[in-house]
Length: 535
Image (tube, rainbow, N blue to C red; front, side, top):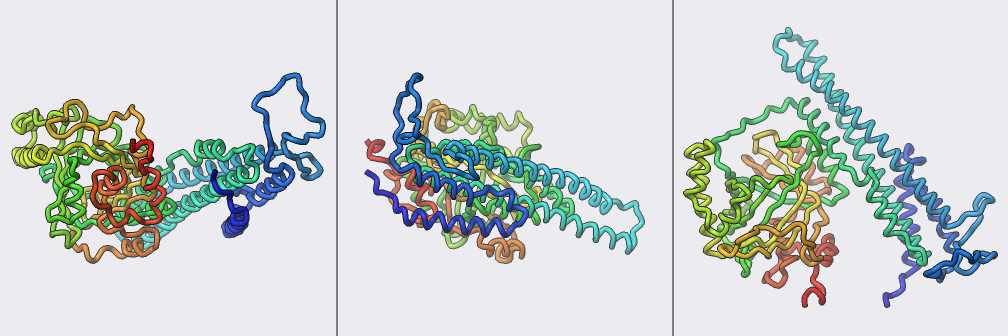
């Protein structure tokens, strides 16, 4: 049997939360009548619990010809008097539903207001930008001064709308926490009628929690970009698909994700290669290794020239798969890495992995598509090197990472590039064979169920900052962000290493240092193999 809960500790927790909730509510006077009435709901709940007892019994069957006990005693719903009227548990649930509806209405109205404000701001920003670019108008000091004043006002309006969105997110989270606390308290005080699981599922299905409102940040980013007069770099079609960069990685707790996005987009635009929708794109990567986890241990041991090999695709479209090799340089004394890649049609991935699709055939396919000779030569060189590594080391699919990526960068200007990966999950993929033994699939069948020990969800967002040029002197705004307390640098963090260490415990000889961090312990433990699935 499970040990009984420490009621004293639970009650202390209730009092502490109620005090914190009231403080947050009082900090925003306009929220007082809009936030869930936690104090009233909690008080009514405790009064109901006081008259219900802890051992209410309900029969598993009923009789349509048997009336309820006239005194509503044993087994009946608890009843108290509120404002001279009868108040039962069902009335408490109705109040909870009413509060949820109020929060939903307020949230939706505020989102509409912010979106409408941003639409107007974008129009004004475009007009200002066009006037700034118009060389046909006679230039004068007064005109320049007027344009500068308008820019200042537009920037202030943009920042205010961004802050309004962050305040709304805080409002949503406060209400969510209040409802969850109330429902947990209900199940603790009145265990005969548990409701936490049902109501939390209902809450998570509310539009104000379920919907993606990141389009707000896309529009906000466009406004800031217009006011900065960002000049896009040029796409260089002839450039090789490889690049050297200095990379640092940070964990960002979920509660700070929107604030971090807002801080970045005031200086770098959201970089998107698609039209419409939100600010992020689904990214899948299948990492390769062998049964000895040779690539994993090479990176763990900081072996000079250690590589990571992966297949990557974007969005839900599997037509084009990128074969990528990432190499860490400088004998691991620095943070420099180089990534090289070439593209394959999805139907050619398995033939490439098992060696039946040759480099000569790949070169012919590139020529038919009109690729330049220099590009063909570079891609074929990498094709040959990767194919040789797969065969010689007997590599195969091992771990998949999946996340939503928001990228910030002036288009085609790699000087400062920031990515923020959210909803990060890792999945065990060592079910397709190795090298020549890969005959039918190169990734797990998405329709098959996944055991708890075969996947893990990472609780934080991952921010990567990639710099070129003077990497020791990043922009001041970036230094300010990194010192804000909203992110924590995790030296050499790797999604591949983390996923392998958590999901392939029987194959790895060592785990990364961050695996013991208390903030990810619950996530790691949730994927631990049980005695049952260990066999």
